[in-house]
Every structure is written in structure tokens, then in C-alpha cells.
Image 1 (spheres, rainbow, N blue to C red):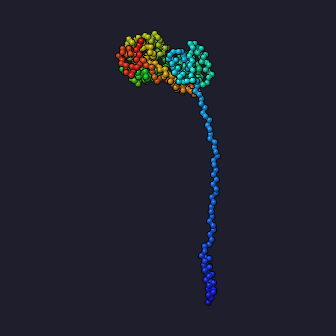
Image 2: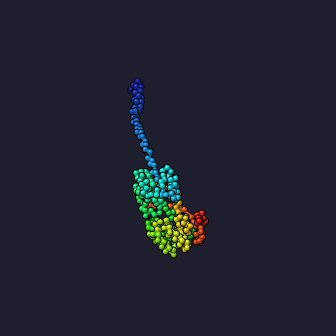
Image 3: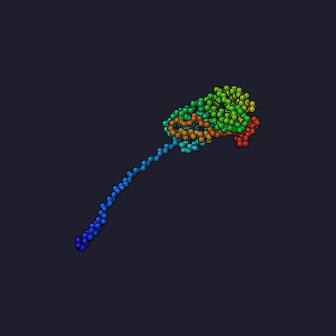
Length: 336
């Protein structure tokens, strides 16, 4: 039998053993993961690219060549010079064409330059400047003088064709057929005119002649087919004597005649249509802007006008039993 002493020892030892078994085993310390340091790399500083300022090229200077001091020429030149400001200078041609050509030779070596020729004399002289941009105006027979080239273009001498036929229709609403007689070389213009006449219900008959005698014959031969005539300033086929003759014929036969000068109303014209000088200057300015870059001139050979300087012969209108519409009374001009 185990004595009380050993029992106590065994009991204490057992309790100690149980306590030691009940204690959890020591844990290993947790592994702490340390993230690698974040390295911030700044992008390199890029200096902004500074574009050089655009090179501003001054527009070319413009020399305005005027055939003579005719009012129609001078007014166009002054209006154009006013619009162009310091860029423009005006030079009037001399009577001698050889001197004119010699005078223009000083521009051959100049690079940044454009020229405007007003009237036939100045335009023919400017033909010699083959490598320069030239805009001609106030010239009717530009074909016959070979004024058009890649660098030389023009503005029509004729007033607005559409406005001309619009006025004719308003003055004479029953008119159906009109004749126009010219020398050769105006096929494009005639097609434009025929289209404009057709829009207002008028048929435009065109005859080509080669002399004033042919003009006279053709004019009278058309009398039974048309109610009126549109006269153009074609001095190749229309002389002063023939002009007076056909105008007398028209008055006697009660024909409507659209003339190209207010002075011709005194000969029996129903109304006159002329170009508006400011309109001519504006169209020339547009063409100069088209050609500011060096090289050939852009656009058509001829630019047409947008306006018309209209005058109506009230005496002839009354004789032809035509009532002048109220909106056209401001254009009435009684012959002197």
C-alpha cells in the first residue's frame, strides 16, 4: 500500500504533468512581408517647342495703268486705288505706244508686283509684261488684241447681262425676240447672254459680221424677225455713220434699242446700259486677290459684272407705248 506521502508526491507530480500538457506550444512569430519601397521616377522635363512666328508676306504692290483721262477710266482707277491704299500707284499712258512700252519695261525686273490695265491702249502695252500678272478692264474686243494668257486675265466691259435683260423684260413685257450683231470672237459671251435672255422669256438672235457694211445689212434684214436690238461697242463692225443710220432706221420702224451709252439715247435708244465703275473696281480687286501668290492667274479668262448703270428714254418709251414701271422711274433720262 502506498503511503500518504507518496500519494501526495504522485498527485502533485500528476497535476504538474497535466498542467504542462495543457499549455499550448509556443508559436513562431508571424512573418511580416515588407513591400519594396516605391520609387517615383519623374519624367524628364521637356522644353516646349516654340514654333517660329509665321512669315508674313506683304501683298504685292499694284500699278494701275490708265489709257487716258476718260472719265470711265479715271473713276475706275481712283476707286481701285482707294481700296488698295498704299499698295497702289496710278500711271497714265502717253499718246505714243512705243513710249508706253518702254515705260513699262522698268517693271520687268520687279518681283512682287501686279498690274491693272484700264482701256485698250494700256492693256495692249501691258501685253509685253508676259511674266507679270495683269488684270485688264474696260476693253471690249480683248480677243482681237490677244490680251488673255495664263497670267493676263480680265474683267468684262459689259454691265451685268442678267440685269440688262431683267430691265428689258420690265420695260417691254411683250417682247419676245431681240437681235445682237457683233464681230467674231464672242461665242462664250453670247451663250451667256442667250441663257440670261431665255430666263426672262426672250430669244436672242446673234449674227456675226466682219464689217460695218455687213452690220448695216444684217441689222435691217432682221427687222421682220425681232422687236428690238442690243447694240455693243464693237468698233470693228460698227462705225459712227452706220450707227446713226441704223438708229434712224429703228426709230422709223418703232424698234426698241438698248444702247451702250447714255448719249445714244438722243439718237432714239429706248434705254442705255453701261458698266458701274465701282462694280468694275470691285471685280478687279477680287481678281488681284486671286493672284496674290506668284504664278498663273486663277479663274476664267473674263469675269462678268454684277451691276448695271441704267438710263431710260421716256420719250421713246411713250412713242413705243411702253409704260415705265414705278420701280424704274428713278432711271428715267429724257433726251436733250
